[in-house]
Figure 1 (cartoon, chains in turn red, cyan):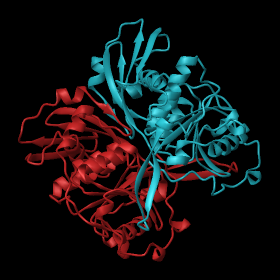
Figure 2 (spheres, rainbow over the protein chains, first blue to last red):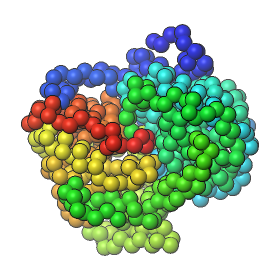
Figure 3 (cartoon, chains in turn orange, purple):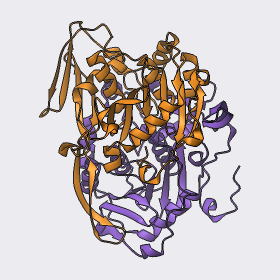
Figure 4 (cartoon, chains in turn blue, orange):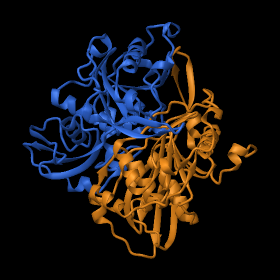
Length: 296
Length: 296
């Protein structure tokens, strides 16, 4: 287990724990030379989420934070409201279920019937509903400094993670200014984001002063999710989609993508981006720290 | 538009068409130096799929092959059977809908109510159903040669694509031996795979002699999809999950991952893998051809 002896990891409220035995398994095969190869691969498990006795979905997850995943999923699907009184969150490891209970009675038959398959998965949301909810969203106009982005990228890249260890995983990190706070990983990118949302709901942590950093692409779905979580800045190594950019501009989300080394592109909110450090002074990306190519 | 003057692209039945105007849009922003930056980003659009008058799902897609996407999606969700007589596939560009019609009457109310959110999205499949369907799957025991894998990787990496042009996209290629045949891309990896399934259904092309090559991770979902399509070999640059490997071994799917340059790892079907070329003779990965880091 990684001891928090260096500043990079010490900053985290929640850091990845790649050495946790449950999260990976050693599997034997052969390599390109025909030699025996033993590699660690990520363990995904089904987790069935219930809301007040109603089965909602089964998610494939690394099951490190099942309660946060359940809370965040339900919140991001708008089955949980900000003002809901949560009376219980019960995880059963044997049954691989989480039951979230609220004081309010809930019934989501309608929501469960219609769904949108987006580039990831937006189970439970209707496309029209999704766009409608956005009409009312206007994010706070916060400034973001390029020095923060460079610091975050450097720290996050140096943080030991399942991504670096075993690939096949997505990471998303909730940050404040230049400090990474909560680093969640999972086989599905939307799980990682939902776990962050669940943590925020559970701790009552605010969104307006946060930056969401992700390994993933800045699709419309990712942009919508970030905006619905109330986070005003979204950053990634990866690229954009046109609709993602459009929606970001509509809701006032600052989006920075294609972040590698000293380079980045800002396609929304450039007026809120303060370049407070000379890119020439930023260390270019070190191959040793380059994230392994665990795509998709 | 790419002219098929070189052998790499000439092999393809369907090759990517990154210059197709509908697929990308130029968007303006600023870069790390504060200079104006104009970049091409992928256009995603909603496509609503109907089966015989019943609305099934709305998928976000680059909309290059809407008919194949609809056919393949329905087939992979097992709402279309191999023996179904398809009486029509009607795409309406203005309404952004595709209607697939069959001689058989269909009603999938039940399937639409329960769903599994996997690491991507398995809309319409129940987790239990998914695993049950697999019990009956045994793929043909075909040999795969390492020379084919090296050839495929090299050719695919050299093929002009949206992935190389604009990032934020996933690619999956249907191959036979060392020849790439059908290269589909989309914002969602499952769309890319579904488009291949739709093409196979439409053309009647068989699966038993094919290899599926993907940029994406070899999760349980990807393995299941490949197996249900009847394709006996799955290859990727990316990593594995433990369950993906387990399922692959159960159904007899040969899985090769972490393919970079001369290196790879085979975690299922090593006994069907013939190493017919010395890895030392294989050109190591050229940075110029390294796929841009469009993750997730």
